[in-house]
Image 1 (cartoon, helix red, strand yellow):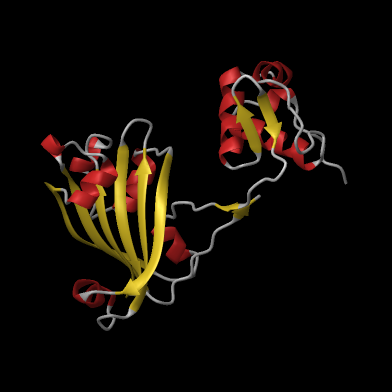
Image 2: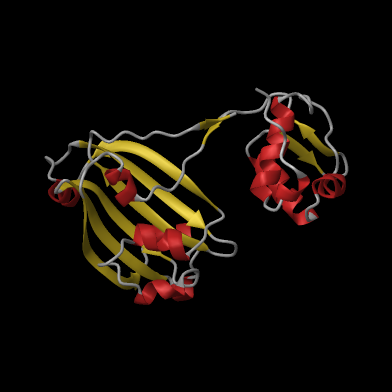
Length: 241
C-alpha cells in the first residue's frame, strides 16, 4: 500500500514540513548529496511560511540529515550521522509505564548561592550567582527510584520561586512552564556517597547511574540537574539516522 504525501494544506507546522522532507529523502526523491530546493521554493510549494521551512530544515541539519552552507544551499547528507536522541522524561510517567506506583518526596526548595559548577552551567553572573535549589526523591512502589538535585535559574523561570514543588515535581513543572531549546547531558557510573546511599537505600559506594543535564531556553540557561538512579535502572533512547 502506498501512502500518499500530505496535501499542502497540512503543512502548518515545522514538524509536518520536516516529515515531508524526510519522506522525500527516504524515498530517494531527494538523493544523498543532492541539492534540495531553496526555502522560498519549498514554502511556495507547501503553502506555508518560509520561517516554518527554515525551522524544519535547521532541525534536520542539526541531526546530520541535511548539510547547510551559506550561499551554496542545502544538500542531503552523503553520510548521515546516526545519533541517539535523549528526551527529557516525566519521571512520574516513566514509573507508571512500568506498572508501578509513583510517589514523590520534596526534601528542600530554597534560593541559595550557587556553587561554581552550577554558576558556570547556568551562566550566572558573579554579582547574582544564586538560584533555586530543589532536592527530591522519586519513588516506585514505595522504594527510592531516583534522587534529584536541581538548580533553577530564576531569570529564565521566575515563576519557579512561588511554585509548589511539594505538590508537583520540578521535573514536571519545568516541562510545562519553561520551554527549552537545547541542552547537554553527561552520563557516568560511580559509587554513591553517604547522602546518596542513605536516600536511595543502598550501601555506601554502591554503583549508581548518574546523569547530569543542563537545558537552555531561547535566551538563558533554565536548569541544571543531577540525578542518581538505582543500579537496576535502564536507559533507553531511539537512534536517529
